[in-house]
Length: 420
Image (cartoon, rainbow, N blue to C red):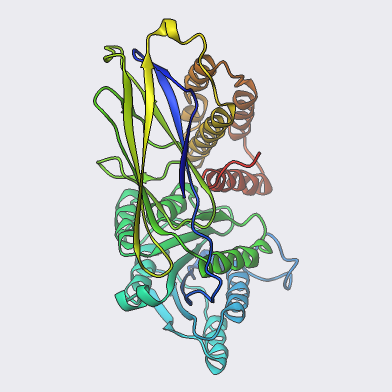
């Protein structure tokens, strides 16, 4: 379940740079039927959700964004099994419980869908109240018997309740610690990507952008299927370093605490976590350095698991690096994650209308990486420059949707193992 690779088999003891690839594989799902799931849909019904959807191919031409969200929510209810639980919370300036979290039965399905269809648009956007009203319905007993997930669907940025990203991220970290993650779905092109990403990643969930409304059903389907087969929950990775070695934050941009523990959340497929390891200009004694990786998680039966792996990194003088062995697969992963991070940073500045910051993004890290591993980085740098140029001009509505899709797809790619 826990394996590792170094980008270089040894490192300079003075101003050395290396990258550690940690691969995490969840246990195989049990052959018997897994635990039931409990899903809380948190649906934005603010006035902007009355706007027309970009893609009207799966409903009448006059369908609004809320119409599509309701249609997909009904589809989700049909897909869930008897014994699963669902709750519906909607929000504008305040939250409203449309259907309390309850077990699904044949008769209840009709009632749930009637409640969904009855939702209508209202006023402003109070995301925090919607999330809070949903989270209050999750009991400790439910977490032991069900796989639990909250899914937020919104087309805007919070302008009521808790509106600061950092404050809301702190709250949903508490949800994560309580065993509940939130996946977020950005509807349309007016929402703030970083806002929606922060809610998802701080809680251990995933962020999606709807580049077409037709995609919404497939997103909800994927969330349901992966949740039902979940075998690794609330995963976190810690690294114990000896004196003389230092590390950077993980390139995947998973949340870390003050002690450097990486909170990965629920793991549905193989994950590759990349961490930079380095020595400073003062140097250390030239000897092998021992590190310890520890993975902690809760399995599908609710049992807490812990696995530790010990690894060694030889530190040598610069003159002994001539025969260094470089793992180019790891370096490609580093390149991919660095590119993803910089692209999303550029888009964040663009959405904040800070075009000067878009142009001034530092690209020196690619040059340093290229020199350290003797690896060509020009293609990544050219792609980023092309994106920066696109973000510097007035763009059409459909292009804004593509840019948001770039943001979400790059984040999703950083949350799974690189495919060769």
